[in-house]
Image (cartoon, rainbow, N blue to C red; front, side):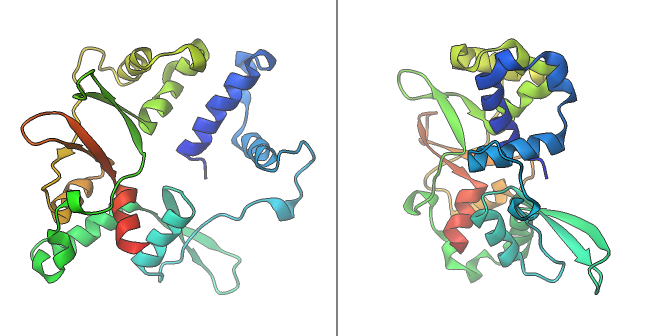
Length: 243
């Protein structure tokens, strides 16, 4: 699988080796060649990679529990796990589904939607729970009020129209990076909307909002203002519930 993390690592490596690669070489660089380079980077060696050193594909079977699949995603720090059916002799593999945290959370919310009281934890305000890791970078003014949010998806948008080829990462400020994200999403003059919540909102409310596939994180703001207080991501919720 090729992931967002791969692309972020590709960007940093391109920044280091830009003089050694032409645009034409970048365009024809294959996924398999990148995977080989990634393994070498992890091993910090230029020697050929024996098959035994290649990481196996992290996957799950159709009869595994949602909890096991969610834990596999968290523990391996990945975003998606392919659900694969294997024949008895292992000669035939069939891809059934791609499991991810938003889909699992959506199922959990559907299950508890009409009976949230059966799990008291869901009624706890998120401000009292040990949630929050860095999943995006909030952009604030001098008074701490939220202006924008820069996330992994904004970084991957650099791949559109080959924006990564026109910039130097160490010479690009956040204003320029946000403009590139706007351009890549055809929203130069549009105000981007973020999903927000309050510290007093219950965990159930937060889970319902995060169950929307388009919502990957909630910005926690102060009641009555847009002063930033924190960020809660899908991974935060699952880490708190399962780990």
